[in-house]
Length: 541
Image (cartoon, rainbow, N blue to C red; front, side, top):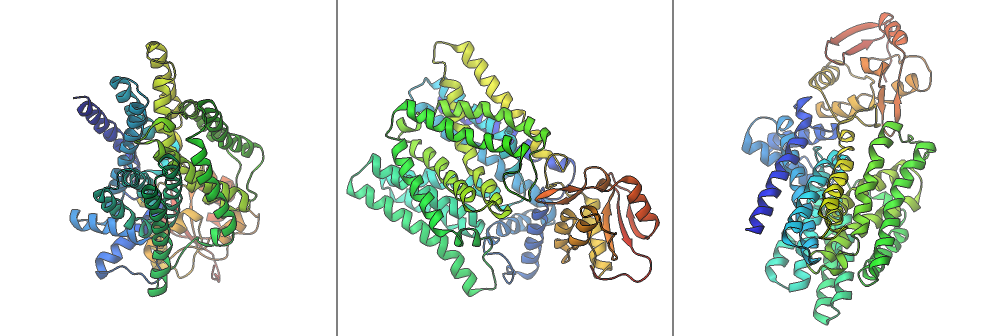
């Protein structure tokens, strides 16, 4: 009965999470994230050709393209319209991982069944509404599935290491086999997670059989994660992307992985006070970086943290504190403790690699993308901490703590749906934008636009040049002497040039530019678009 109540509550929380992740459909039926439009294009081509167009594809684009292709073939219609619902379902399933982790941790901590259920459901709600994980668990993007698969692999591998059951080995292999084709960063995080988990397992169970299983599993994982990309790139036209970030600093990466393994093994054996203190210090670092970045950019040539974004993110310190106060719980949990430690330590190791390698946008992207994998286990710990910090006798204080932690997480939810007013990257692609890029690609050989519309144009086989518009809007140069696809919002929130801040033009200058050139295409949408061709002899962009 208790498990049924938890299951029923988890299903309700997952439906709530699904509704939030279907939210972008209110603005547009197209995928949430312009790169998702590209994935829809790959699925379209795969269904049309009957095979993946591997020539030129990234080796880690196969997995999510295959998922969209299968769903589209079964549901009918176009991948453009099936992509977002598919991604929303995948993202909502991540909530269930948070519920499982928190419930297991709370049960192993010896709290009563009602609090076990409360911890699990609170963790699920936190994963549902916390703005950063919400933002990254609803796009049509390979990492959406990666955020689900990494903890799933960790849970199953942990059972295999502890029980030596062949069914768990088979299930672990089934989960693991889809990760490298899905996302190279997810594969990297999986490799580090399994390695840290192996180290924790050896410390907890030093018997020879357990040690052999742990080391062997870690080695096989790395061989497959790395070998897949090398084999596919070597035998097809697919290419390995973004690998140079670690190829340039292999020793640094290995050093941080070794430190993560040692730290994980130490963490589960030290005292509760040290565990909580260490966790609070580590969790304080990202908030410090966000605050410092609001004053001075940590990574040069990127944008400072906007004050509006800072206001929405700083309340997340409250769930972080709740997680830190429960940091001693994993050391006492045999069913989920090692998994939780590994799921946090792995992304921390990769984040530290990015922070110490070079202060460039490539490593900023590595830091940002990899830190996302730590959100689910930390929010699970926050659920446990909120429910257990005041003990069983102070029910009113516990209720207040639960509400405060949940509200603090929910405050950040608008970040997920925000556009260029808070972030440097716009996720919503309207039908007007999609149609305008299709027209520009079909009618003009060479044209320019901003980063957002240029990404969307990739679906149509084209892509507007960003440089001429950037030089015009940001550099103060003359307007491009070539066709330009522009939006009215360039005069307000600005034109996207991720990772730098949006570039704007005054309303008067924009109107004067339209007046002095030919407007050959116009869409009267909520954010009007125009295709402008220069008078006289235009040049290529």
